Amino acid sequence: MSKRCTTDNAIMVDPRNVDELADGVIRLLTDAALRQSYGRKGRETAGHFSRDKVGEEWERVMHTVANSRGRHPF
Image: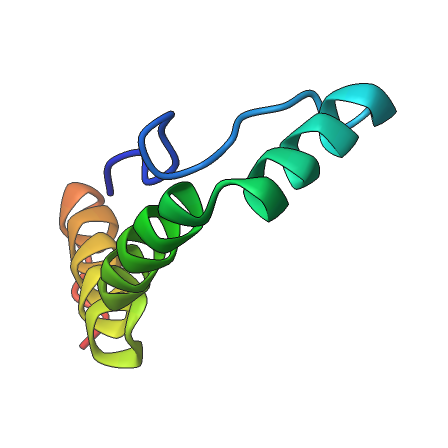
């Protein structure tokens, strides 16, 4: 899977930096357009993680690993 969090769908901050975290929260609270944009993009991103999609990806990885070792798990 590709990287899902980018600067166009998340405010990237150092999670250990209280000031950066606070600034990020304040930015979301005060910028309605940004909130709406990130909300929309977040729902789109969440669609990549449905139970079916994650299960299919997991099965593909398991087949790849098993086939690389000459085994067939399923």
